[in-house]
Picture 1 (tube, rainbow, N blue to C red):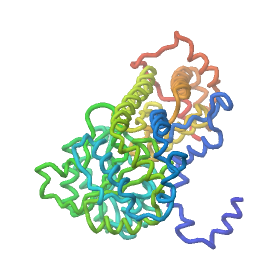
Picture 2 (picture 1 turned 30 degrees about the vertical axis):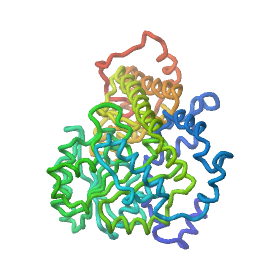
Picture 3 (picture 1 turned 180 degrees about the horizontal axis):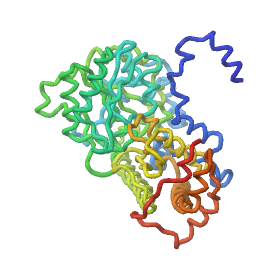
Amino acid sequence: MALMLRNQEHFLSKIATNNGHGEDSPYFDGWKAYDSDPYHHTKNPKGVIQMGLAENQLSFDLIQDWIMNNPRASICTAEGADDFKDIAIYQDYHGLPEFRNAIAKFMGKVRGDMATFDPDRIVMSGGATGAHETMVFCLADPGDAFLVPTPYYAGFDRDLRWRTGAQLVPVICDSSNNFTVTRDALEAAYTKAQEAKIKVKGLLITNPSNPLGTILDRETLKSIVRFTDEKNIHLVSDEIYAATVFKRPSFISIAEILEEQDMEGINRDLMHIVYSLSKDMGFPGFRIGILYSYNDAVVSCARKMSSFGLVSTQTQHLIASMLSDDHFVDKFIIESKHRLAKRHGVFTKGLEQVGIGSLESNAGLFFWMDLRRLLSEATVEAEMALWRIIIKEVKLNVSPGSSFHCSEPGWFRVCFANMDDETMRVALRRIKTFVLQTKGGQEASAKKQCRRQRLQVSLSFRRMEDIMMTPHLIMTPHSPICSSPLVRART
């Protein structure tokens, strides 16, 4: 099959055959490992647990209850069928007015009503992926670049670059200041691009951050806005996790910053927001992406392009009805944050029991796990060796930091909201067992490992998993973790 595909490639375009999609990265390889051996409570209890997918499944019962109680919201029910014809025929590419009004209102609500949004500036797209690509098509020519603080979402290499021909220039951030985006880091990246004769057209930020699960504070946001204004480049703020902030400090949108008095002189034509309901509401399958721009020309251009990735009118009709229900929306936002906070706490505190830390975070559907002390050396190669063990032996799909262009090996993104409670307990137990196994076997196998030419995982992981369930085996957060003999050997 592979040979047949290679033989046919010369009939295809350069875009179709280049590797710009990024499917050969560990980020997507982890998904493939899960797809080939997916975990199931009874059918495949030893399979791979998917922890590389940022999906919000913790509040689906609230959505389902609303749908059951509001059958007229769907044109595919007996109660809603009277509206079928009016919704099924061609509609204005701008989107249903009630849909844009509901989205604008919802965007303000999840930002604490600290900013208002104009429905006429809302452009719909097929998910945030489509919104990002449309934005790049509007703002940049092939070869132009966007600065992006690291670590950043692995899919940006596909979403922003693959078909547009744009480039991404990393703004290097590190753990010394909890990966804060500084003016010095921005200047360094901008200067580096200029020296390479690369035209910088904009800066892309994710707030809340994927993969860090952190938010940008007010002063950092103001510094970013002033930087882009001074350089006369665009600022694109990806805010698709706005309603996932589950504890203080509260989320601050670029839209709120622009309404402050000391920002009055900022050129708003350079300001843009990408939003979606995929994360905040858990609707990735509905493909509801939103491009919001303060620039009239960008809104006009994006509307023309949106015909290639519209949201179905059936979906618009349903969502408009749902988001117009203030009582439901208020209840959903509060309860969703409560459940995210609880799940985040269970995972991070559970890992602390075996000495595994993570970056302090308060948002998103994931946390940034610190396994640097399990590396034999601070290299991407050592990180990948550890990642292969976690995939193949521990049977967890977590994403290595190098997939997100992290400058420090040893960090991993762990998604926690895409599974039920039972799967969560199994996943946490596997991680704990692996850490105890690694520490326990270190002294006994150190001499043997030095003589090995390649990585051999010989300890019985399943036996250790059973032992882990006994109550007397508990480690404190201060228990030392030695460099893993499982990772020290080369693959």
